Length: 301
Image (cartoon, rainbow, N blue to C red; front, side, top):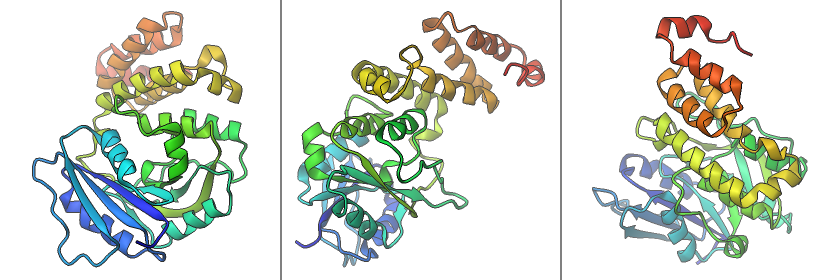
């Protein structure tokens, strides 16, 4: 096999999008070493693409255990120096692999790199992105308060992954941030400041279920605070405000008038943060009739 990069694609009920993802790999300006498809127990098993003339492709079918477990299986099977993750419903620009391999080859201390996302209707741009010369502490703070790049933009040194371990399989959401925090203890992330990934938005995405997403985020934050509090405090997070990132996400749900979810989230947060009277005030407003909530919304700043 030739090429430096193994591409891992976790798949669950995404047959309609997979052809586009694979085609974007075949169109790369440098060849990848291999493509590893992990069929995570799709009800209708994935099939090899007909007429495939791209890089070596392996299809592995497993019981449904979630994206983290699927990616970890791919990591275990990979042979490339670098590992790039691609969700089956996303696509890459042709120079994505070339630009990232160059970035990692040119910076021996970097453990991973990410690209920007394309900003077009039907796709999510992520960001805001920090400056390319951002300090490790500022990068960690940006990551903690705002996940500004998806997994489909990331390329990682396989050696670094082996050093820190893979994705936590007990997390349904936030497992990517938790892994990035561990990788940051080994070395920095490089930024390729070009929109080289198309992150698709569609109705079947897990993150479209807001309440499920936020409950998963809450559990992930609890795990990360338990494991990485010292790392976060060294980067500049106030020890008494480690939960503020999740709190901000809850308030954003409220400000967006998604009151059905906001009521549950505000109550759940206030139960464990009883001295946060502003959250209590928002909760009381959200419990009012919808017309009154709309009238009162925004009064508290």
